[in-house]
Figure 1: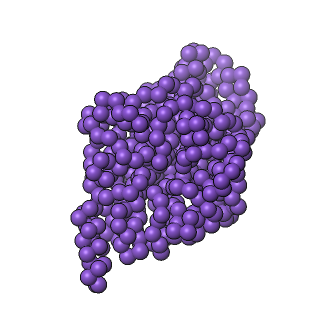
Figure 2: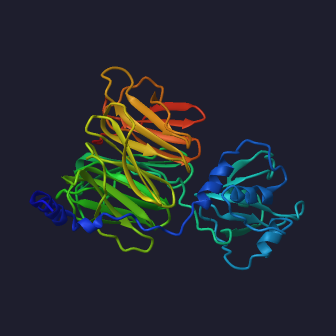
Length: 457
């Protein structure tokens, strides 16, 4: 090996604790996003008249669409519930993809079943006075006097993680109708500069998150959620290292340092409960690549840093999403100012393919399900609207478009997140310094200003 390459590998090893043997693919995980995809199938049918008085076939077909048979030979939801003595739970916080049951009433001996989308909400066929497929809160039906039985996951199915690959930039979501946005505040409060604002039916005020181990971020945060109430935050620390904080059971933990030498902001995603993948732009280019990876399997521990083989070095921080098990899609700006796309699949790492364009700063990415990718960039044009969108739908990449179509010019890298099929929320700093929000839900809405004085890199 040439001395220059040895020296550069030595520098990277010192920073990341990495050797050339780190150039390996991620081991596969035994997980399929059946629960997430079944919920997406159900959500896509909201408003339709299908499955009138057929609630059990509705949830069965939701899972059949993913290749999972939840069971046959049951005449109604009460029979199904009584036929499964194990795996039943009686709390009212079922995970994503759970089958949620109510018992018989004086006018309905069959009971009812719906599919949970997390956060205490379910998607249902006809019930009470609503004849179309719709969503409702478990608490609302219970308050109406309907006997709640509980919930269970279909046999052999793991709970969903919610929106697949959500977050990774400064926006995240852990369930339907839940949004969290994050910022690096310009003025620290009690040793923290992690700013937060969240939406659940209505936007809550900005707050600064106080963490047990005081540390200031020196980059935009990257945030991902793999379950209801669970948030993972990554950033570059004051020593240019990767730092990590997390919210679990209502309690914040961190910061902890993973070392390394990071340029710009990290990015993170999750393809199953307890799984985390973090990508960063390393401080040095080794063998033509500066894409570095660290990951946590379910149950831990964190795995060593590894250098990802690539055909060229990135010229920005990366953005990563996951549409399902053993799949990562990542994006960055190339040396020519174009958009680059790479991916990890069962056959290993693939980096890069060029998607053209002329972009400023780092890209962002979102996905709402298998074979759907949305890339968001700040374009190079000097006048007019400058958020540009490119998407992949399984049939190929579609041309760039100005989206959202509001004519508004932004002054920072956009972030996007999707909480369900067909729904995308996009955020970016406006030229006035405030945070702007657009949303796609059949048609585009916004922008609305969320205020704030955060710094977005």
